[in-house]
Image (cartoon, rainbow, N blue to C red; front, side, top):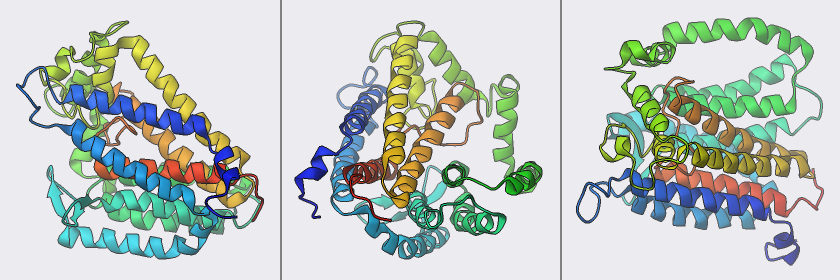
Length: 371
């Protein structure tokens, strides 16, 4: 089989591709509005939408590259890519570039690379390779082994500090583990161990400002002039949208700059204010169809490795969508996780398209069975 085999195009998940392009287009329009074109003359001071379009075009090119080769070759490159990723993460504290008060990027001249985004791909590849090896459910030692694979890069990311990306990586790994399945005796141990680990991590692993975010989530009104300001303004923006919204470029909270981080973490608050409840439900429906299309590819894959790859991508997007929307609505703590295709971010946009290309790759080759 060659990449130009016409049978491949017949099996492309076209609904997934279409939904991806629609969501990205909505995101560009939303960033256009979030840039504040009603307040500046001519171009906005921060034309995020133009930069996002450039990143999107680059992402589409990389997506095509991720589609044309046989995804089964990823097994060979999984370990080398993982080792390279660890090296990049270790390099960040020494040679990393500081943006917005956080040292999370490596400057490569023509663009800034965020190693935490590469880590999500490398952990996905390696986890899919390891977990696809045996059909039975996982025992305790297998679980410990695969958790080490995730905790090493996640720990390095959290130390940057980037709690959101580190947590997202662990949630991705946890989703694939659940997709594989655990033996009953493992569940019994986890029920006892997980709450203790979470308490220890909160007490001794989180910095003071990160703990403050948890407290703000529990009682945002008490911190309305401090850490809770973002949540309060986000709720005001979404609530003021009403049923039909205020209209494109007409949201007062975003246009008058009351809403912080409106182009990144709180991009969906801009959308909710301008398009209202109806628009927000429509957007949520698009994301649900998008997730279902990814899951359908995992379900229909004819080999375990392809199924685990697609399942990992499903959980990657599922957790980001759930946490970001919950965060914007005040249902979850603010942890800095972007909303796929709507939030601004070059590395994140390219990785999103890469992962969609990977799912399309699996769907294109699902009629060939090969373990």
